[in-house]
Structures are given as C-alpha cells and as structure tokens.
Image (tube, rainbow, N blue to C red; front, side, top):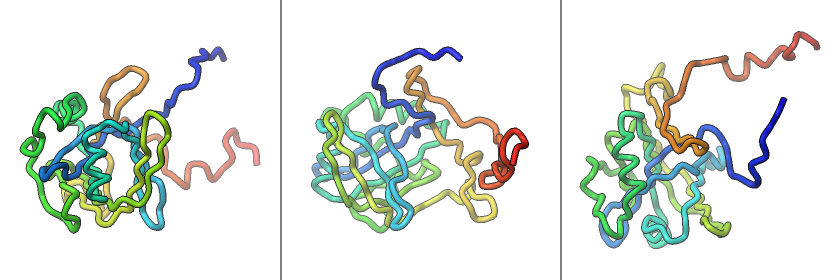
Length: 190
C-alpha cells in the first residue's frame, strides 16, 4: 500500500463542528470549533482547542464557563458564519434563539440538538492553541433526537468538518455494533 508523507499534521477524522458559547463583555458570543473532543468520563469533561487571540477565549477565561453546542447538518451556514466572523466585530448574540441552563455564562443554542454546559477546569498553552478543558455540568438533548431515552446520532445528524478537504459533512451508515462486532477475532483466527 502506498502512502504519502504529509509532514506533521493534526489530522483525525471526523472532527465535530461545534459552537462554543460564552459571555464576552456582557453578551452571548459563539465561535465554531472543530478541534473538540471528550476528555474524561468521570467527571465528564470536554476539551476544545482555541487560538489564543479568539474573542471567545477571552470570555471563557473571564467567566470560567462555556457551552458546547452540537449543531445538526441543517445549521451549516450558521456554523460557518460563526467561524468566519469574530465576535469582536460582529454581534452574534441574536443569531440564535437561546435558552438558559444551570450556568449563567454558558449560553445554549435552542436549535442545536445537543448542548453541554461546562465549567472551566484547566487550560494548557500548546503554542498556536490553548486547550480548554471543561467539566460538563449539564447535558441537554432534544427529545426528538432520543431513541429509547438515549441520544441517537442519526436523529442528531451532527455536522462534521473534514480538515483534509475543508468541507462540512454528515455522518454515514452504521457499519457495526460497538462492543459486539469485534468479539470474534477478525479473519476467523482465535
């Protein structure tokens, strides 16, 4: 199998396209982030890498609270808008219908099927980005996106970003049941 060497690149697929929300200078602000992931299960924590100059980072550091809003693929234009325009220059507080959760400075986007309220736990300066780790204080999932009381990614239809092509995509077909399909050694050998 031939492989091309691309040099040091931070490539993982897929990367979720999320809206990071916080309060900056007294108003709700949102930025798009694709470098976001689960950091811990107990306590539940999310990490997101944010460039040091981002307006949203200013609010997270000042308030020690933020939200991770998981948009559906139908929200692609709004998500891209929040990634293109800085809250320093464009007021994004009225772009979405918001709702309040338990944290005062973690604005939540009503149209996003999944919303996580996070309290800042750690930051780590990694160079171009600051890794922000937040403990999840509360999780909100739209009732229409649940199957048997559990979040269903097919119903959530999360927006994902492809760093290789610079495109937004959606998840595809189910290819196997986790913690089951791999019980037998692949290839039939035991």
